[in-house]
Length: 401
Image 1 (cartoon, helix red, strand yellow):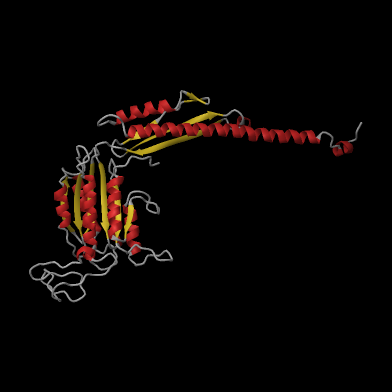
Image 2 (spheres, one colour):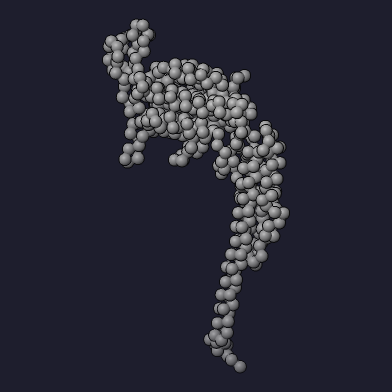
């Protein structure tokens, strides 16, 4: 009989134990691969089924669909693309949501019973997926509101150069005071206005806004009932054009805009909010959009940046975004103030204020460099393309999430 000392020093059979542990580990790894691989296949099937459900519900083959119509179509396409049982998993229920104006969302999740890793204590694996799709409207209905800065710097060139006088200097600026040389604009005593002409920011804005108007109110859209409203502002509310489908009237209003005084975006946004809630304001069954454009920091006439105006303006933007359905808020920084230098800083001190304010006002994520609702337009051609992009984006059908 072996002594205790001999037993402790005896290693016979240890290799068998090590092989057993090794085989158990290999079995666990292979089993986990099988269970998780199956889970990934089910997740892909859920993604495919919810994609098809959301796309079909967003663009149904019926006129004027209700939310119930969209849900019925989503359920049908979901069931067609996810069998009653797939890899041992019963078809999970579809969760469907829609405001019937902007988008639809379809998502689902399933719990899979594991076959192998349950020996490690994990009996189920949860997988989920879904899609969010912008509604595609065959006869789109949009209410778009342009909230446009017409402060005096809008009559500058894009690079910030002021205009040359075309009349006497000094001259009367139509309010009884005499401007000294170096002022941006002036009026003669017959109220003739001097501006930069074709090279000004304001002229480029008129052209770009006309392009947007022509797209949204195109006669090529069947039964076009889209509408556009305009609010202009500087240090106070200037003018408004109520929601209208009259393309020529809207373009005439745009062409008659003039630039004067300083910058207070809250005055324009407050008026835009009032207009949206009026009897002729936003319709309940349309896509709502606000396009806010400015070329300078908020100063309210004080000459320096006013953070309180930024804050109050962002609050009004949030009111628009909180509507049901939510309003899409696009913002545009015009001119060169928000351009960056080689080190990543703004070329002008006010650029930081303008950039932060417009990012916070826009829909989407404020700190994202890929925010598709915030635009920078340092040139006339870029501004025109931005307005065309906004008009076309409003009418796209796409999976967004």
